[in-house]
Image 1 (cartoon, chains in turn red, blue):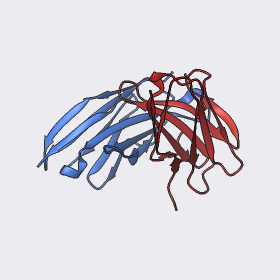
Image 2 (cartoon, one colour):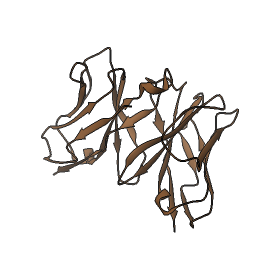
Image 3 (cartoon, helix red, strand yellow):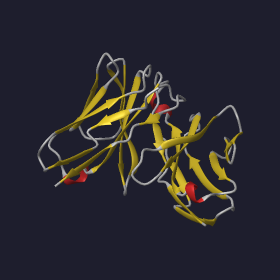
Length: 114
Length: 115
């Protein structure tokens, strides 16, 4: 099976802009979670989607949003970008998103905000 | 909510030695504890995981132990090799989401294996 894929792999934006990142889960996986990875804060949970519904959300401002499509592909959007949003954004897929489901990560999107 | 502490933050060993990384968690309801290895510029890769109904799990040179009473779990790598050099993250499932879960990660341990 193909692994989790993310596009684009790299993005450079300026403050105030918005950005959309895409994640395609492993075939058959219906849950997609998003994480932000920074050197200072490590890996932090953003949100989780299952059957096109957000079921779980981390402690991030409303500028961070997401959605999931009927084929389980997911997108996340960050509006009004700030310098501190520069990070590696990782998505992970699992079968149904139970809390003991194994999560498999994509390669990430490296976002740089100037 | 769940909090995961990971130690040490850096670890340097000689090739062939063992390496041990320890994590503690705060939520007694957490029931799933994976370990990920992340090489520079690459995605986190699951190397081993353990669920709360077992105390130990082994896969070749890698083992994980879980002490639910003390709320800590450890990664053991034996006969380390230079290709084991990477950042290792522990994680614990967060029960606040109910049956759905997200992972709470430790800050990572940078392991260097010297030839």
